[in-house]
Image 1 (tube, rainbow, N blue to C red):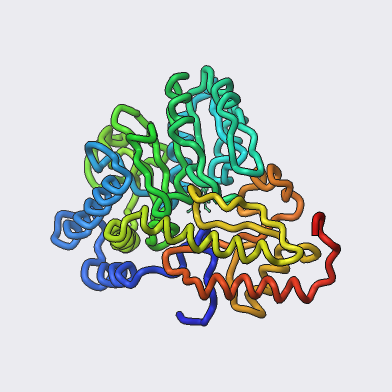
Image 2: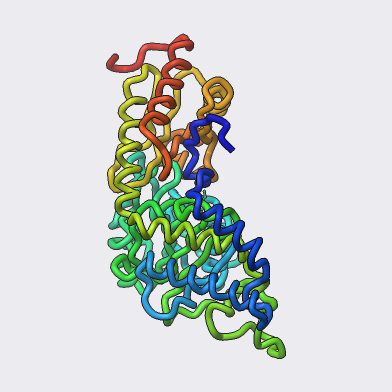
Length: 391
Ligand SMILES: Cc1ncc(COP(=O)(O)O)c(C=O)c1O
C-alpha cells in the first residue's frame, strides 16, 4: 500500500519490507502451502527444506556454531523469551535482569518471582548504561542473566560481552533479548558469550509477523514449555530430547518462515554492518534536526553503537496527541506511550507521561527524516511554549 505516509515505526515492526520477502510468502502459499515436517510427501518435504534453510541462514547471521537445529522457531521474541525464561528457571533460582527490559521479559520473570524465583533488577540510567560493578554483585549465585542487546526506548546497546563475562564467572547463563538488534546490529553469539538468543522476525530481520525464534547453545538443556505434536516420535509420551523438535510443538509458520528466510538473505547480501551504518546516519540526521526545535526534549542519546531510535517529547503537547497529529496532519507514523517498557521510562523520567518514539529502518530516506522533523517543527511552532532553560 502506498498511502504516502512516512513510516518511522520500524522498532515496532518493519512494515515496509523488501519485495523478495513479499514474493517468498506468496510463492510459498501458491506453490507449497503444506506444513513442514507433517508428512513425507513432496510438498511437506519442500516446506521442511525452506525451514531448514532459514535455520541455517539465521545461525550463520548470528555466527552460531554447530547444529542449526539448536535454532528453534517460535511466534515472536515474546514466545522465545518465555520458552527460555520458563525453561531455565526453577524455584530457588536467582535471575538478574535490567530496568531496560520489555514486558516480554519483565512479566514472565515477575510471574516466576511469585513462585519462588529471586529477581534482581539492575538500575537504568538516562544514557542507557549499566553499572558493571552492580551487575557483578547481583550476579553472585545467579542462575540466569537476561539483557536486551538494544533498548527499545533509548535505542542504546548494552555491553553484552562485558556482562556475559561477569555472568559466566558467577556460573550464570546469559539470555539476550535481540528483538531490537537482530538485523540492525551485528550479532556474534560466540564472541559475545551468549548462551541463549531470543529474536523476533518482523522487525530488523524483515520477515512477516508470527516469526521469531530462540538459539540455544549446545550443552544447555532446556526443558520444553510447550508440549505437543512434533510430526515424529508420535508414540512417545514425552517431547523428543533432540532439537529442534524438543522446543517446537505444533505446526510451524511455513509462509512466515519463507518470508523470514528471504529477509535474512536480503540482509546477508547487504551486510548487517552496512544496514546499521545507514540507519545510524539517518538517526543522527533526525536527532540533530529535532534538537534545533524549540520545546523538544530529546530523551535518547545520539549513540552511534545503538539502533535507529530517537525518542522525544514536545513541551506542552501530550505524547499520544503529538503522535496522533503527526499521523493525521502530516502522514508521519510513529509510536507514543510507554512502549511496553515502563521501567525504562521511569529511568528517564517519563514513566508518568510516556514519550514519542521515531525509528528508522532499511527503507528510510533523508527526505522522510526531514519531513518528520519539519512536521514536529510545525506543531511546535503552533504551540505557546515556556522558555527553555539556557535558551
Ligand atoms: C526489547 C524488546 N523485547 C521484546 C519485544 C517483543 O517482541 P515481539 O512483540 O515480536 O514478541 C520487543 C518488541 O517491541 C522489544 O522491543
